[in-house]
Image (cartoon, rainbow, N blue to C red; front, side, top):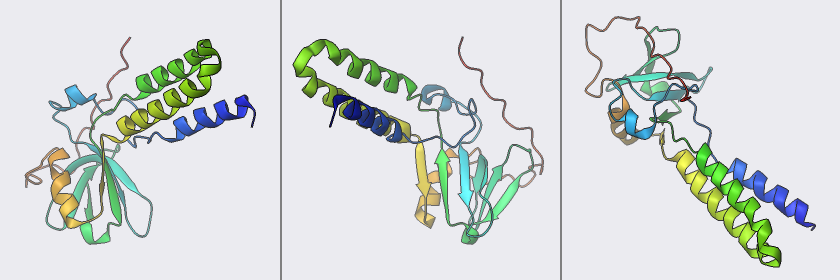
Length: 178
């Protein structure tokens, strides 16, 4: 197989190793800032029938998960009607790692024939690290125990306040740094 095909295959594999964060761009804060963010994580819930529901994770009760979709109207979804969920609690910012991986892999051209060894090392190692970083802020919810663990990422981890209005202003998206 020619070297160009190997390079293309390696770069494509590295790109597909990363997980896409389901939150809208700019909605989640980076890891350090997310620790003090008063809003909940982003959650995507899959009911067995019907379209997925996504929004800010407000709370989870004994039989219901509450979320705030972008329209600002609080939604309640019965847990027994949920097939699964995905919680994203911060922006992993894995693009920088992907860039360093690509730069490192391309820099191996200066290694001459030894690049046959260093290029795959850069590509495989960098892809594994970048993929791991992209999946770090994601938690899958499949069982009752998973819901108890995911509760800490809700805006109201102790449960939904009884006097909470049914319409809330949505969180403002953060701007990209200049």
